[in-house]
Image (cartoon, rainbow, N blue to C red; front, side):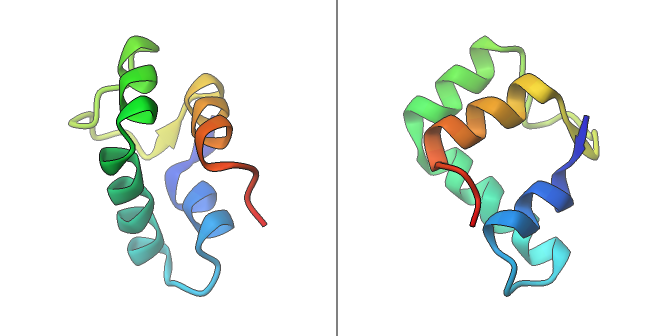
Length: 68
């Protein structure tokens, strides 16, 4: 499991944790192939978890590329 804030900060290190998480969420919503693959893997954006599963994190990295 990876904290959502932790993964988001890898992609947006210049932002604070909450802002980075919101930006990552925006990217996930706007990227239809990413959103679709996440849903097929069981991701529910309404879920109040603070974690991504390893599979969800893998899918995000596949679509957005490895964080810098």
